[in-house]
Image (cartoon, rainbow, N blue to C red; front, side, top):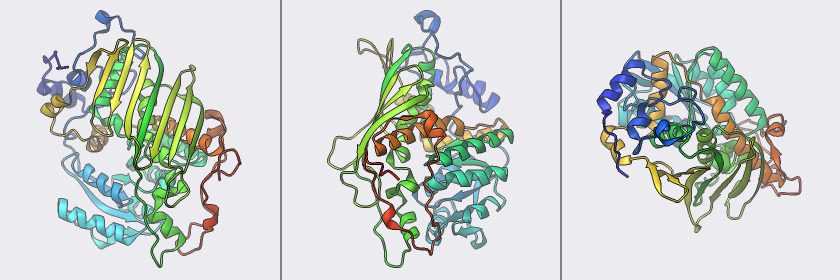
Length: 465
């Protein structure tokens, strides 16, 4: 479906929104520009689920507005940290990276080499920090912004130190892997709010223009009251690292963090959270219980599952089905749908893909026009746009705090995980109050861990720790 209303040009849109306020809650904005068929509630009879202005719609220009220099430090210099560093540098003028930290020196040096090659940025040796305490040295190095992309287990501790020292931050997903981490993150988010610090999280759908436009359509009541939905992230087997001679137990696990649930949270948190988050963010609903099953069929190493299927129940009784799998040779499917009384919203693909709304007969009544987005914008990568939003919020002194909202999705994923591990129903109240703590007894790089303790859970036996 081609866009019919072209009265609002990109130039006039930027003049009336981005340049006027840079960032904020916009009742039309980018969603009005990018919608193929704009909704008019008075004519259509749609009843909004939430009134415009009561939910957040980010302004997502190609580049953040110019302003004071922002110096960033990166904690976690692996693949995601390296990617986020470049994304930050591509998000605005007058931003730079001045410090790097990682447990391993080779990771720090690799990112430093990449920054020099790609962006001609020199990171001096005295700003390259190594070890389990490297995060403190990065935060204390005179930076304005901290980009935290370490294995998820460390996120609560790092976030706490970042906020204690009054730094803005980008936090990669997920935010925690256990209940102890959840409570620390929630408490730290409140402190960030009190200090007017901006915190953006790595749930990229919030900065993917097709999903931002969808959010407004759903809140405008285009699909009616929410009655259900489904979210899917079924892909092939993911990476793992073979243990090398000379590695201690902890070094091996840190270098192969994806394979271990205490470090990664399992793939229902680490990867599938993008789809789970889409449902809870777009609908505004919250889970009260989860009943799941899962197993490990073909993992080569580690103690994680390779498939999960979860039935979530919301506060209003609505059910949402969640499915994720990382097994080669199976049907892949990355998609989300939300069912309403008047129609269905559907989003496909990891980044990009078809995003449409169909009525109850299956007729498309709204779709996001990717070609028009490409015509109107040079920057369409949500991994960059999340940093555009962060920089805009910092420079315009309009703080954003995405952690509290993301905690709903993060906890939901954890509920599904623990239900699958145990075979028992979990509830929001029980999980948020739980004593669940994934911290190993020994976190020394030179010490010897009890590797026999890291076993794949067996549902129904109590063997889930």
